[in-house]
Image (cartoon, rainbow, N blue to C red; front, side):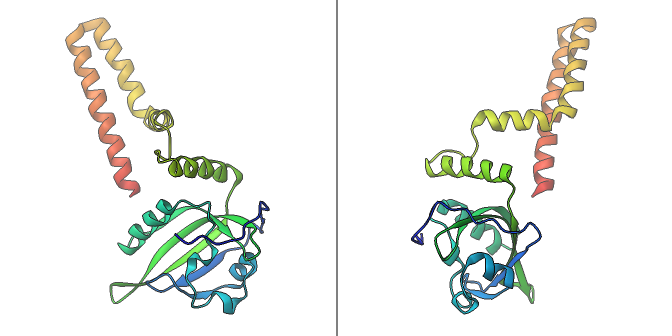
Length: 199
């Protein structure tokens, strides 16, 4: 992975209204970029055009993030994520990136990236996830995944859980167990369906 140096500990903040836009060819070489990207990156436009986009990659970024991005966009899908970039002088800036394939004649011909400033809460989550990735761990701890799923599926499982208790109380263990099985299956199906819809 490219290790751009030097780096500083100074964060560069840019206006929330700016949209950093760039396009690349299939190999990731920059084919165009807007003035906002030039300004925030600290490079001159002629230093960017024709160069690999990882010219602005910060060494703190795990290579796994970009492997995931390339696997996604090269298959024709859209990728979104938080990226820490490096300016020419070594300062860093965080962006929320939206990378999409550009099609010509139903084939991927290149890629376009639109980036906006990342929120502090997003940056904190990304830093924690990337630190875990660099330590060869899952991006999110198991308890956080479980908590997220429980809250997300609360509208499905809570009424069924209450119904299972009521069935057990009034009609016995068998109806309660059937209600509990229905709860588990319906919640699992809802979680799967939501994930598929999101993809």
